[in-house]
Length: 91
Image (cartoon, rainbow, N blue to C red; front, top):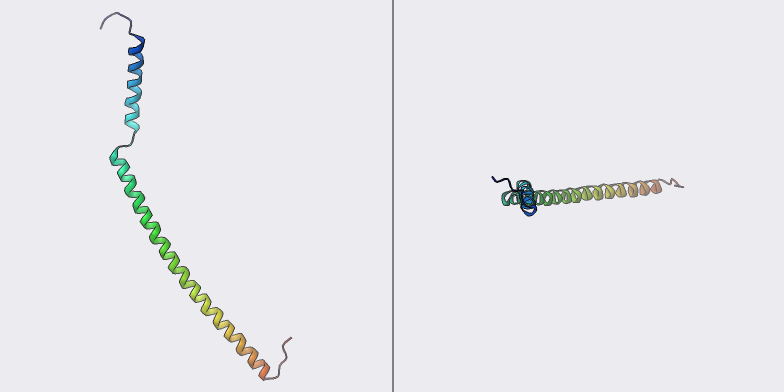
């Protein structure tokens, strides 16, 4: 090395080079990006499957509730018919 002072431009370039090297170490690789994409696709499939299962469960619950309401309606009608048939006034 010589005793000459380092040029300002050369010093800036070395500083920039150091920062670029640091950024390269922090940057995601193509493999990292591919892994994240794979995970996102897997999660999307899982969420889709979960939503379909929830919709199926909701439809089953709606069917059960509808059946219960129909049974209750039938029971109330039978009670009213029975009460009217026995001459009981409902107020």
